[in-house]
Amino acid sequence: MKGDKNKARGFTMIELMIVLTIISILVSIAIPIANSAILRAREAVLQSDLHTLRTLIDQYTADKLKAPQSLDDLVTAGYLRSIPKDPITNAADWEVVMEDTTLFPEQTEVGISDVHSGSNATAADGRLYSTW
Image 1: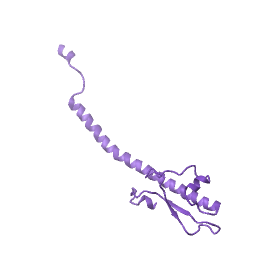
Image 2: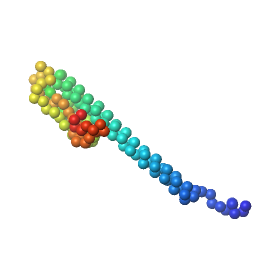
Image 3: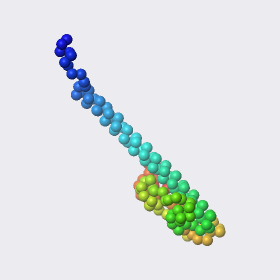
Image 4: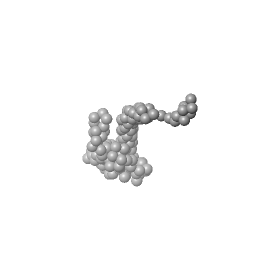
């Protein structure tokens, strides 16, 4: 009985190893799930940004009867506060499509008609971001 009071209480090395193994298994499962969630969020932001930019290009063209010559024209005219960053490349490196035809019969000047991501990476659905 006397020896029981002096016995140290705590975890054995085997118990600690089992707990660390379980934690490492859980982390190895969670990391890919978190990475795919981050990728899906970036893709959703990209789709939203592309929709917004395309809508504003059309509005600018309809209002001014001329297409913007650069995305900076949208900022200068007050349609945007600033050009958003491409969430895939993390830079404002959008690929603009210049057209030589007009969108509206009254349009006097051609310019940007569409915008795409500057990334050449492949999306989760297998398409290139630059084709969205």
